[in-house]
Length: 112
Length: 111
Image 1: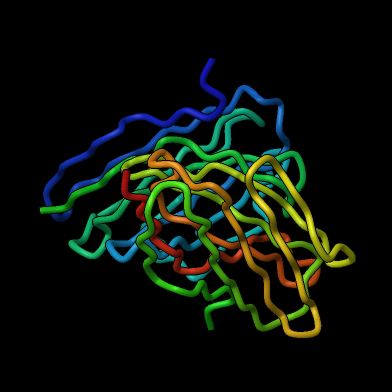
Image 2: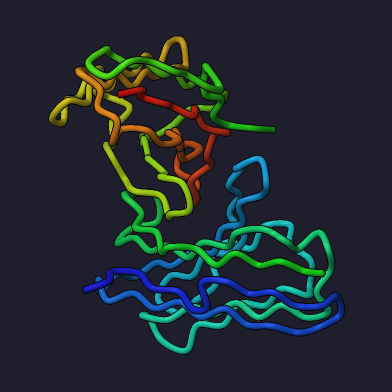
């Protein structure tokens, strides 16, 4: 069974479009995260939710909006996509905010 | 500023050799973690060491932590081709509810 899953795995789209990435975890964790990994492999946190409440919101453009319908799901919606949004986006979860995190397989977003 | 900085950026060794990677950080921490990322995959947690611990082992992995120098090292003994991956250290920031990752060390183990 996959612990943290993301869909889609690949996303190719045009500038200006709106897209969503979905994440689900079946580990019963309370905390979920979205990370962005750029072309140089630098991994940066974007958002964190604990029990459906937003607890971390890094300096991310308003075009990015996370939504947590329940503890097991954290989706990421991106409006008006830009070239610079091209990256790999990882979802992760953990039982407590700064303990071991479990990562999804990533979504490679390419904006043309 | 970047919290964790791994050194070296890239490391190439032969199978059977040991691989040592270092991580330096800037602020006080509660714990430091190491993760592995295989090409095209998500990160996998390897080991967590708390600020009051100096050394921790897990299989062929040995992690040390020196809080006075704000540094950690990851040693992989008797390396295998399957250890080829990028290795990242991650730190909290003294109670912050987020992990800050370094830029990683790319390890290549040649058969």
